[in-house]
Length: 100
Image (cartoon, rainbow, N blue to C red; front, side, top):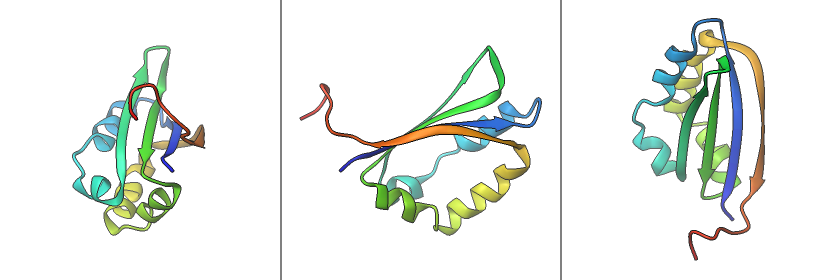
């Protein structure tokens, strides 16, 4: 079953744009690992928050991706930009009016 993970990443004050630039770098590894969608967004009224929506082929594919060396390196590089405030939720996708 398709798996969705939607969350917020709090950034250190003034570091949001740096995190956005980091998170939006091209990554063939994510697609190869089963990532179907990885969207990064911001809101003007939350200047130190980054929003991320992920869609994966399965929860297992998402978990496995976190062990990839490239993903581990990306997480380590992003860590200094983060405030430690995280939020979000995940769910198993049961259907969509946009696809069969």
